[in-house]
Image 1 (spheres, rainbow, N blue to C red):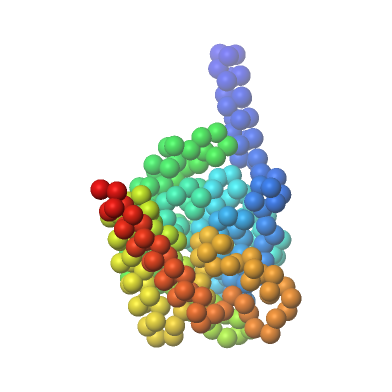
Image 2: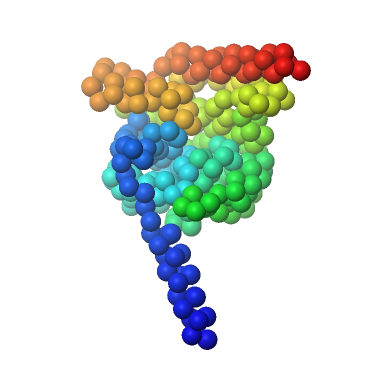
Length: 281
């Protein structure tokens, strides 16, 4: 009986330590200070993976959650931005790789938020969770219903349009919504799969097809002028942050060309990958 009590005590102590451990917020660890990009959009990600907090009339929606345990920086970032009193109502996951979904269950448990993810992305999340180890060990989120292609989700006063755009993985989820800058509205787009799977010609072709579809969608109605890539190097995020800090006349995150250049560049890379794979057969 005594040994059992000791075991339970040690187990619970280890769990508490795992729950309370927060990686050092240092540049070497990939930490970056959070910042406001638009009236309603804040960057809360790290040096390598993007995470955005979208402020709506009913609370916050988080897009992508970083890997575990680096996801634990997000609540601290929200506090630094003065957003810690806001309710986090929704968590959008662009795909099932651990650096995007690894923190979803942690944030869901912390805030009681609803997780929006595709069915294929959750399958991949389950696989990634089983492979996770030690301090990076995470659980997949609890999902009530899956994101569907073409669905529209209203979160407070913000409308999110969802598209399943496979190619990076089978379950990539792209998100289309409006951001505000000094009261003016601009259309933003998060491409769920930021690049093709270069090892898989079938997925690479799906990526090309998805990019063609995204390009057409982005030109319908008011064209997309804000590229909210799920990796910061894909949309020159930190370079634009530096420009923004210098109080330039216009918001550097708004561009008539950058999103479409990004789509074309990733499409060309996927085509090269398919050509190279075919030449090896």
